[in-house]
Length: 396
Image (cartoon, rainbow, N blue to C red; front, side, top):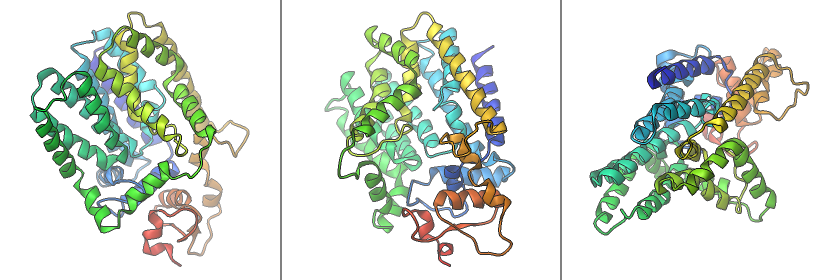
């Protein structure tokens, strides 16, 4: 089976599963945004809502097919990596990369759930491709293109901004950060501002509300709790998987290229440092996990670790999909993410005949809006401030 066939079959499977999976509450929130297109939103940039807007207008809201543009965009990241790796990997190693990337929890099955991570992953990957081209060709115009690409990524998620220090570190390690390159790096920064213009325009018009919310969300805690750091490290070890981490470590010892090591570890180290200032969620360094798989494969000549990882991840995926379909776990209040798909079923089954109906949280309001295909608003002022507090319909 060729690489293109593996990639295409994986895409078809992803599209089928993403259309079948119920919509999660957070996804439904971004779906609600797509009914009110803006340059930016209070909680996040607008990229994910624009993708939902395309999905709704091209495919409609049949099942969850409005996810498809984002799923396709994220899956294209894998082919960018294949193109980048062809000079270094033989066909067998490239096949293993595609298999592992499709099964790894956060970048495989996780890419079926549409969040701001998906557009960010695509543009982050494209950014790595551009910077790798610069390292191999030294064409300075690529630095301007890199800035534009990262600007588009910033519209997906603000975390794209940490590409700048990571990318500069990669250039420094490869001795490409010189006085000669400085004007082009500055032009790249201009390209970034141009590419991310909608974010800056909205924030300028709204007292920088979105930036302030994200900074407080990640770095706003006044006191430190050891559990934040411990849970973060354990979460990354579980998501990346011990076999992958061991293989990556062996590749580092075998002198994998500096740019790959930096992009594999950079986001993980960055959010490790932020875990001393606030609770850091496991998915935040998601951009590290495709480079980490590449790093693990880089120095490998035998693939027993890859086979073991693929089997375990495959079985885990089957178990998760079975739970979504049959709900066999005995505890209806399970904290597993799968429970979120059915969290508000009882409310839907006992929907009042007369309204209006208001929700307590943005998750509840969004999920109910999606299932009923009719707006349900969060009551303004309840729980944390969010996009619903900016909507006229949130006031009775």
